[in-house]
Length: 81
Image 1 (cartoon, rainbow, N blue to C red):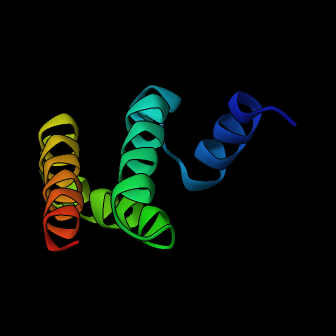
Image 2 (image 1 turned 45 degrees about the vertical axis):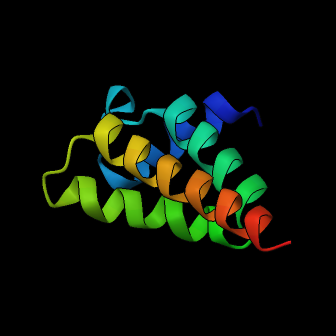
């Protein structure tokens, strides 16, 4: 199964329009978080993004804020060493 096939199947199961699933946005966020914090933070952050969007947050703005938070954490960690 490809990623696109999985997303379509998961969206169908959850009654979500595939157009409402910004796959590249979530993947980029997960990558940035995994590289700048600890790897397990990536799926948790993706879930938190989903919660925020479900509560009305703009997906791109929320993802940008989380990416900036992860980047600042990485900078903070490198400043300590």
